[in-house]
Length: 179
Ligand SMILES: [Zn+2]
Image (cartoon, protein in one colour):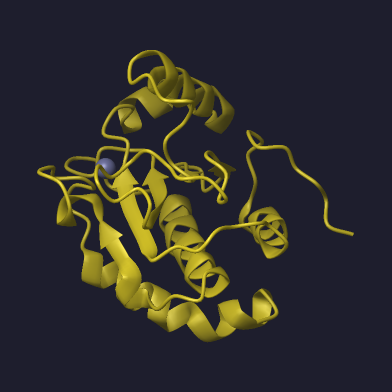
């Protein structure tokens, strides 16, 4: 039986996959990748705790942005843990003018400066690949925030590199998700 997890609980990759398998979602045209910028890895080192930062980001989006809660659908932390934010049945708040079209995935860090930890790197392509399979998309439907807005988000990361990683893992991900 799939273990039921409440939104807000950190998951490892295996738990994320089980959670995603039966998760309700609306139709999405693609995925937009972000980084948090703030907090960066220095802030993370002080509180290396996914739940702590989930709460902080959720609070920031509610109180400072006036949104109904965390704007991203998924958060990926430097220790590789994954947390759901906005439900996949709901529009997020992460890419102005395009929120109806795109699921938002956010990596904690400032990748203008931070060197991504290996665990986060693996979870990043893992989450992107799983979402591509789950939503019936192709790797070319993965975009970066800066493709749509005047921002550098997500820093020095390369869109083509992440599309390549997703393409490379598509076949095994289809098997893992039973599709
Ligand atoms: Zn962004």
